[in-house]
Image (cartoon, rainbow over all chains, first blue to last red; front, side, top):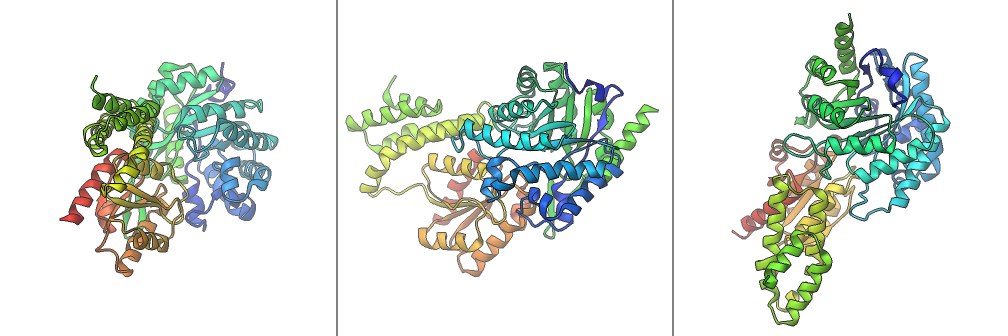
Length: 292
Length: 214
């Protein structure tokens, strides 16, 4: 039984959109670790969370996607793991001010277990340190997102569950003609079954592909486990225009997929790369118009 | 099963231990290293690439096969060097400046090594000057650029411009890849080729080397 069932009793819940691009719009340099801004540019980070809450997010994430022990060590900031993660939760909670729940984000380490770049013990220690730090600031749940490798996801999920908080685990299906496998070949069915077996409270798909691929993914995740399904879709592949990155999908075109997602049984819907507050606002309008 | 076929199979299955043992046994029997490469190893990696393209194989299988190939090549390389045989080509590879992601770049490097290329891996967050130095020092025919982030894609353009200014652009072919990179973007920044996957990167590199020789 998922501890998140009560959250989604009334139908799909709207989450938030991309963070990296929002921070870049506020001056984050390319290649700079966004998570460090929790300490150096706290106001701008809180602004991003607030922009999503204002636009209708009922769940807002935290700027902690890469604040695991391994990535922070590479950036020379391993000592700040506790502060960066705690502050990330605090900033989103301040912005939410009771209007949205706060789900704390944990992303992959960026190293592959199967190529031997890191050991399972190193990965476990990296996620444990992050999960504990996040939990100490009392978010409503933890989210392990954008995973490709099942083994790494399982280690992150385990570390997150140890905190006692509800945990969502979400994979990036970005491979294959139908964008229905992770980079390591993992299918939605296997991912969902493994998530349920490990005790996750929800399973999902995020990033990877444009929103048009997500209703099918959601169906397949649901077919393989009883857990609520979490979706955060990309706006589509970007293209370059005179040196600038352009996403062609408009907020309205993005949000038009909401009914397909709802019909596929999605419990949480939001955006990933290429989406911003106006995408979430459009998604929220679609959701609200279906309810009335 | 004839030994060439066994070696082919070991690489196809990503069994590095068997691939090395078979290579050693064949060397002891006097089989020419070049025969092993052309009759067993290259066809095996081509088959790996084919299976990857049609979604029978995924990254884990790709990595294991590339590793098996690399293990066998380690035994052959000293012999090949002694006989004066040349690698399939020389590639300088790196993730461009500002981008710390190296999974895709590492995969391409493994596949290129598996395909018989000599690879100079500069790592991640590589400045244009480093690419230039590496091209000068290695005499590589190809520069392979990787980026995972949309915001670091412009670094591919600046790297190509830097090669231009250093007067090296006509001496090397540039290939690009990474999740947000598209063929259109590759053309726009003046790259010579784009590859969507690590396995097709090997075919692209072969094609580009052939073009430099022509």
